[in-house]
Structure formats: structure tokens, C-alpha cells
Amino acid sequence: MNRIRLDIAYDGREFAGWARQRDLRTVQGELEQMIGNLVGTEVEITCAGRTDAGVHARGQVAHVDVPTWPTDLDTWRLNRALPADIRVLAISAVPSDFDARFSALWRRYTYRVCDSPIGPAPLDRGHVLQWGKALDLDAMNAAARPLIGEHDFTAYCKMREDASAVRALMDLHCERVGVDIVITVIADAFCHSMVRSLIGALLPVGDGRKSVTWPFDMLTSGIRGAAVMPPHPLVLEEVGYPADSQFLDRQLQTKQHRSIRESGG
Image (tube, rainbow, N blue to C red; front, top):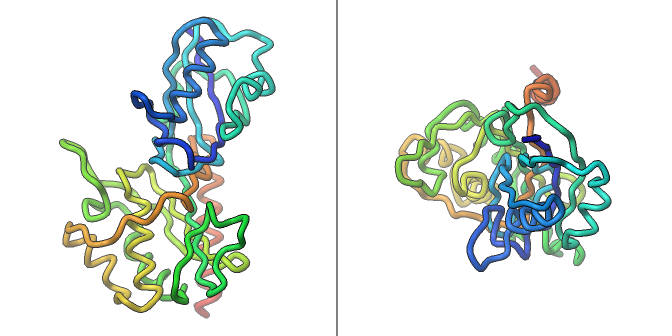
């Protein structure tokens, strides 16, 4: 068998998530049907992060095993056979021990919020959350910092039976980009609804309804208390593998140095 890596982007609004489900339109289902038709056999695709219904991706990674991969089966031919809301960005042959899910070291998501009274730009409304109150980014970042590290994130997950919620959160920060606020979340892996629950804990801090310590207090209590925010502003931006780890280290070091300069340290 030949193992093929696929780098994928998709608009999640009309999908019931990544994972194949009977009688529902999913990203995995569309890709498996298309590739199976082109290579002449049933295939099973494994991804780095199984996104929920309505969640988008710019940098999803998946792998598929096939007996042969036709030499003319390039991104142009794949995308011609796909619906317009899924694109294959790159195809590459990889060693048999590469696993899109288990070889990944980290996943990076972003969540976009608009706290302007005008609301999101009309063309952005399908990818930006409108928030009715002005948000204090300093308070949100102060609340986020204690969450970074390896913790049991039971309070931020929809738990599955016999599943662990211990995750290493590598980065969580908020910054203003134009009129929007972009919240970046990086971790080794995420449990179900974890990213949207983290966002749901930071936003009430930002608008003053909750204290800066509330997100960490919830973490230590293990009791769910934050709302799971809507999926449409959430994007899987990037997945990191061993060859990419130095890039992430440089990103985090640059962010740390910038924070020290801004604080006068």
C-alpha cells in the first residue's frame, strides 16, 4: 500500500463535521467517495483533527492508503471532482509510519470575534461572531495565561466514556486584527468542544461579567461552566509535525519576548 498525505481546506458551514456519518454530508465522506472513485477501490481517510459541524479548515492534514496512486492524479484533477467547499491544497507521498493524527505534535485554531457596535462586515458574517459588548483584551489575555500548560481540561470538554481530558495547551492569546479580535489556540490535541469552551470562558471576562480568575477556577474545579460558542468563526489553521516543531518554538518565543517588552520587563 502507498500512503498519501493530503493538505485540505474546507468551508464547514454545510457539513455535519469531518467524520463520516450515515445520511449526513461530511468532509470525510466526500473525500473518501471521490478518491475511491478515482483510484477504483474503497478508501479510508484519517485526519489530524476531526472538526465539528460548521467548523472550517485552512490547514487540515489527512492520510490515505491506496494500492496505487495514478501519476496523473494531481490537485487539479482531485479538485475538479470535489464540491466547491472542499479543496485539496497539496498531495505528497509519505512513509508508511506517517500518521496524520498520531504523528501530529500540535494543532492551531483561530476564532474570530467582532465587538464593534456596527457588527462584522457583511461578507464576513459567516465566519465572525458578533459580540454585543466591547471586549477588554488585556483582561482576556490575563485570564488565558494560567490555562497554558498541561492540565486536565474536563471542565472544558464534552467528555466521552473512558476518555482522558489531559491536554498540553501551548498557547492561548487574543489580539486585535483590524476591527476583529482573533483568538489563537494551540495544543497537542483537543477534546470535544474544548476550543469553543475556552472561547466561551474568555469572552465573559472580556466584557466584565466574569473575573479574570474565573476560567482558571473552572479548570481546577473540573465543573463545566462556560458556554460552547458557535462553530462558524472557528478555523483549523495548521497542524504541526516533527519537521515543523522548530517553527512553533520560534513563534512562541517571539510572542513571549514581545509580551516582556510590552510589560516593560
